[in-house]
Length: 218
Image (cartoon, rainbow, N blue to C red; front, side, top):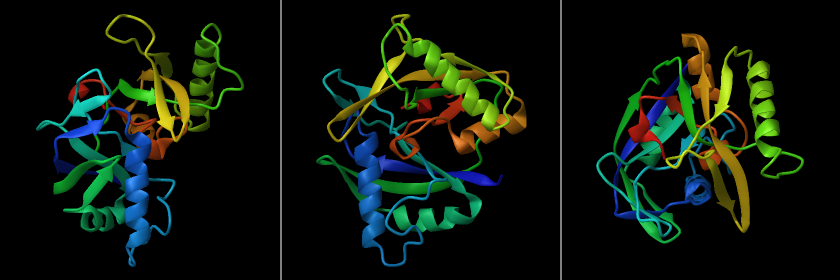
């Protein structure tokens, strides 16, 4: 399980707060335009994308700052390709332009506790009363399939409520929760960061980071 994280600093001012699908679409368009792109017409399933953090203005926009980064995790053998393909590229995210600059490659760090801003599963039905139970059940089943022995929890927001969040994909709102995974050993911690949890991983979902890295949460 050899994988790395490719990070880019950004030039730009703003992004839509909910930009996971738009970011994926911009990258997919870039791959389709690139004649030498080993990725074909879509992103490989093993590539994970993180939505970009910023300062929210509470009207659907975030302002980028020095801590804002575009982050991508991929198998080690793909890292140089992504590094070269994306360096200095301008992405149009629903009319907001950002340039990817100053690329760097890093190794994710293991942590006993990991967090994700948004994890989604395809539940048969969604209602506020039963959703948390079935959602956590799905989390634990996914961890079992990954042979990861740890406990999943639904995170809370700043108001102390369950961290219920949504991702807009075209005209559809997909619901999920912020998730904490506790009790991880070093190997399983890296496995969760590499494989992610749940669906929509190309849209920024299922991206886990050490709990102390709150500044990287999107």
